[in-house]
Length: 80
Image (cartoon, rainbow, N blue to C red):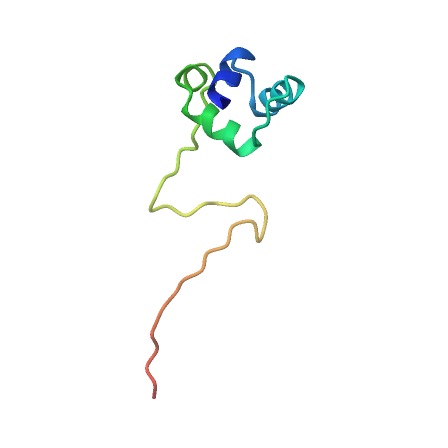
């Protein structure tokens, strides 16, 4: 039913699909609509989201003091 509602309202976003369904008297959760939109091939093709380029092995550089923090975990320490 959520897939049908998503298609009938014109592949709108999550909140617009939810509002359209409520106005038509269709009861469905916002989480269900989010799952349907995430699985919709047309929406995935037309609403591409940029994925951040994550570089591993390099430390980030902040522009201000305390902007980037790094924590080194060591252990277990000797029991002496």
